[in-house]
Amino acid sequence: MYELPKLPYAYDALEPFIDARTMEVHHSKHHATYVAKLNEAVENNPELQAKSPEELLRDLSAIPEAIRTAVRNHGGGHVAHTLFWKSMGPNKGGMPTGKVGELIEKDLGGFAKFKEDFSKLGAGVFGSGWAWLVIDEHGLLKTMMSSNQDNPLSVGMKPIMCLDVWEHAYYLKFQNRRAEYITEWWNVVDWDSIEENYKQLRNA
Ligand code: MN3
Image (cartoon, rainbow, N blue to C red; front, top):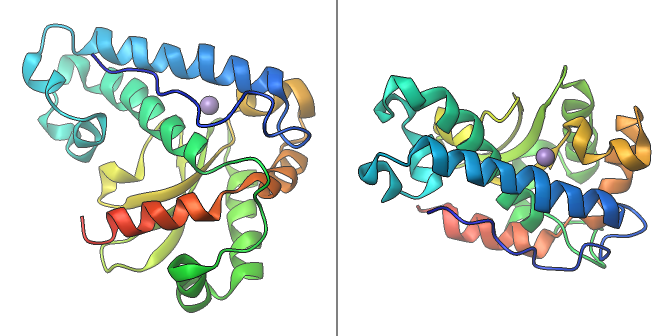
């Protein structure tokens, strides 16, 4: 059974940038529902249950057609939110240091340009989706967007940071003002955690 991961901080820890009520509903309702529906999708398939949710997304063609869309959507939702919670933390924000900071300079034109590009990607998603920072097939950092719960893992990328731009991520506090939510979100980005993700995944 796949499980809802515990948040690594309290629901109100990201105030005033991300409000406690949004965090609570987002984690305990939205994310929990993705986990429940993923479990439902694979309930008669012990072979799939033995795989990590990331493994499921890395090869969607291996998923039986009858449940492929459910795994893509709910498995995608589970994996993306797990990374999203880890991409944020209290008393964070600022600029990346370490290897990720170096690579943002080298691969993405520097932090200011990266921040602008990533924010534009998130703001530009039509409907629901995500902005991502990934390690590409050549080992370079790259920004990308995805629709709905589609995950960069399914196209051979290794995501190390993501931003949820579904309305449920910001509507209670920001209503339709997605760009404002994104501006505030940079104050909670946890570069230490993203650095850890990079180190774990670069040779994986
Ligand atoms: Mn969400």
